[in-house]
Every structure is written in structure tokens, then in C-alpha cells.
Length: 72
Image (tube, rainbow, N blue to C red; front, side):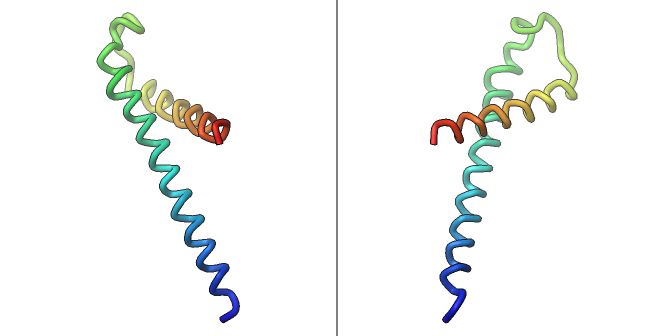
């Protein structure tokens, strides 16, 4: 049937993009919760606000995404 191959390819592509997206998000979350938050007094000298950690998470997602694109 015409169009079935295109639907299959688009489904496989969407699934792989979803996996990559969740992997990048989990790398950013692990960096923040395992390395940055436990050592915030050593790194920054004072407690940071939740807004700082929100922006830090977003920026680290972009950096991890660019690294993944660069490696591939």
C-alpha cells in the first residue's frame, strides 16, 4: 500500500528522537542533582535560588545536546 513505508520511517524517527531527548534530559538532571547541588557551598560559597538551578538545567541540556550532535 502506498504511504505505509513513510509512516513506518516517521514512526521510527519519532521514537529515536524521543529516546535522545530523554537521555539528554536525564544527563542534565544527574549533573545537577549528583554533582552541583551536593557541592554548592564549595562551588558558589552560598545557597543558590531555585531559579538559578532551573536556568542551569536548561543551559546544561543545551550543552549536552550540542555535544551529542557534535559527537555524531
